[in-house]
Image (cartoon, rainbow, N blue to C red; front, side, top):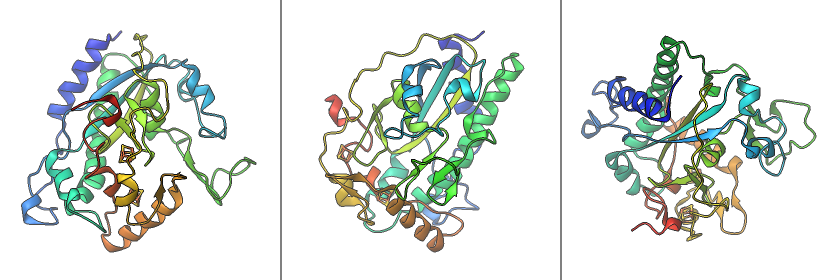
Length: 283
Ligand code: SF4
Ligand code: SF4
């Protein structure tokens, strides 16, 4: 059995030992990017697999009936561990300078960073297996699926042209696990900001859930509108929030320009919630 401290120790060890959290000189899009670290040390939050919010996410006004609860992913699972890996200052600083397209460093963070995160999660679940503990990483499960109108899962009446969803949401899991609240740009604002990547694992150990330091879905967002002004695709407005399909179309465009990479993240950099939670009154 693992305690909270035991799980945090594993995360710390793996963060320091899994290779590849760096832009390799062979792949670097610009010489100055070679050798830059991609992620800072993560923060983690713990939530109960039985948290009633997971069931409420099946409501089409939240996510939709295709969303699978932690128990549906992994019946023996009792705790969800959600983690946020902030991008380093160097990765964020490059994107802060951009106005229309992502920086080279951000593209590396999005693609090579995600590849490292996948390696990290594989190492995490293998490490738990060595201790005799089965776990479930929804990202690796064949049931993980995107849900969009005309694509993905059919048969749900509530899917419409605005639907942009999946069977698991790292951001919604982060909300349950106390890591932060949503922002206008629909990313989750943590104490370390929004610019980074989320991941999660469901484990059988019963660990006391974190107390959420918020009640409102958007409590840590100050609705400053900076993310909307930064968005080159005009996908965010104060009135309507974010249009995921417009954002997706823009990301596809970057995929053509920067193949095999893609990304954007302009709404996550040069904004008050880049590396802190403005609604939490942090300085
Ligand atoms: S930039 Fe401002 S409005 Fe947008 S998510 Fe961050 S705090 Fe909220
Ligand atoms: S909403 Fe999408 S397109 Fe707009 S700035 Fe954010 S990532 Fe870029």
